[in-house]
Image (cartoon, rainbow, N blue to C red; front, side, top):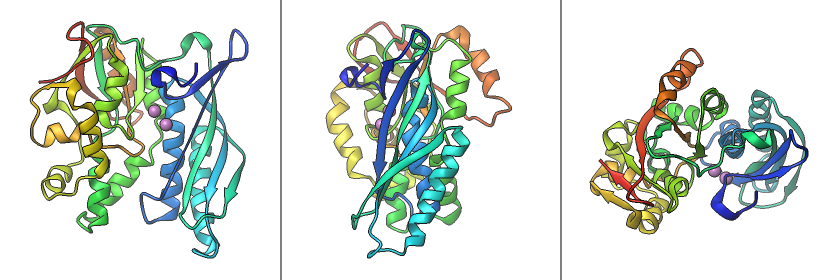
Length: 302
Ligand code: CO
Ligand code: CO
């Protein structure tokens, strides 16, 4: 399984029982604290593995850093954040590569394993399936607000801990029920990644008043702290969106997410069991929509 179909990761079948799942992601710092940045970058890089229903097994560090620009202790903290997340995932760090670059970047190449029959792709949702999301939206808007010194310390801490959270428990919970399709919500926002789930095969109703978001996001968006990526996503995906196309809840579906949650399609009879699986493991989840037969390829805001 390669890059066609915009799957979250590539899959290569080794035997009838084992396929490897590979992905790579790295980016520039989203927060000032190097240890948290390392954790967020690593959690983000592993997210595509979890979205495919796979288990991360090995990771390689990818680092761009210039010792002329920053003290080497900064790099050590970034790597410590990454290693802590890799350890939490149960994977092993096998090595990595660094390049002297004045613009700091960090991330991972990750390999996971999955049974070839249990791969969860981004398409495959059926009419009637329920759409579930596992992290609140608005990380792009909040990160923009932070750059403008508009976000309180406790809100920043909450945001950082959500971005640094592995999608491991979300993946385990979705695997405990019959899941038809899944992806993670990242740079293309909720609408963009939802479009990859429906393609031209099926439609989806999105319950705007059920969308979870950081409580600071509406005020920040209203004050103009909107990331450029939100406008780009909106320009690109707005023609696939129908219904209540106005206000903050319309903006938030295009907000580019950093290390966002998983979003997946489960049949209605699986919802109760799924919700039981989330209890006691500290996993948040929200029912945010429902897949429909028609109109195909459309996201209907209701
Ligand atoms: Co992805
Ligand atoms: Co990715």
